[in-house]
Length: 141
Length: 315
Image (tube, rainbow over all chains, first blue to last red):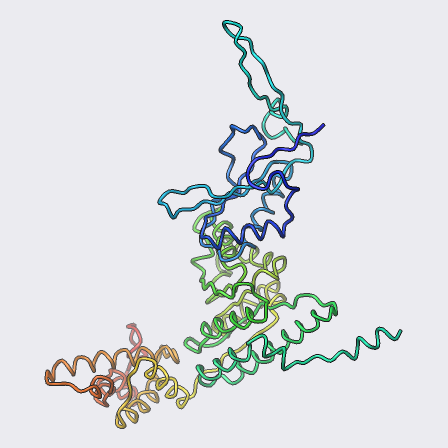
């Protein structure tokens, strides 16, 4: 049984269509946020920093330019997780305002809970990504 | 089929459509603000009409593809190519063929990189910024340098071609440059030629049109010519047109800038009480002090004149 990753905004909704993505991107542009496209094949929740697809995009007037990059990224990493994140620089630092998944692999094996006995009959828990057993690049092919 | 027949009879109010798109205002402003350029204005009107009809057809769901809107503007320097491109962006925006109606104006430097692998991201960056609006490539023929086969311009052209074809609804590309060099550019890049649907040629201005432009520019700056200055400026235009580096309206703007400078100097030198009229009037002496009159004289006498010198344009 596959387990759907829920990270970022809208992740409990069905996958966004390109038109819906465009509207979200338009919202980011209208707020003067810098938009970044990122991808990964390790969806562990503690994996915060995903690979960047190109540089963050500043000064765009229209979402078509970002959607173009999303599609380029899908072409190259169609079976990876791809997310779009928007940063707001108005406070002096680039702070994350919006982040949502725009692409996910066809099969998502999900996670396993590992229990480890430690001293004094304590139990430590850890999340194990099934797909991370394979080397990076072969996980979702 | 009676239903289809009824459909054919549906009345469409073209005038109403024209009014609701507010294109008319832009066209009128174009007429009002730009002197001369009759063939250009006619072509733009025709293009606007085509797009309007196309939009109506779309409303009635008559299938037709998005028309190719890429254009080429050819003409000598200072004939208003950039200004018209700005208006074009506005017209396309009002007709909803361009979502934002902004104009990104670039030259070869902005598109072509300096080392291997630099060009593609640079060109794409510019294209992304222009998406939703109009990309204006000034002096586009510099993109193609046949004398250097390792030139990166070709790479830039290939990316542009791809986007011009695949993202037709996102981006309108306008290529601009001198007529003869653009012709060579199009001949050696048939791919680009076939994707550019509208070729608009900008004619040079006549002396009368140039004078009207000068009046318009002065009006905007809240200056005016005195009667003698008007005659002097007509004479200036006549001579300036025969000298090298003549750039139509741009030369006129430069000449006016110098005249304003001299006027300010004269007012300073006079150092008396000034009236408002003094501040806004440009006198004949400001025009006659121009180097153009001396150089033009020299040319007439058969000396080397300005043509033989390496220095810039006389203003």
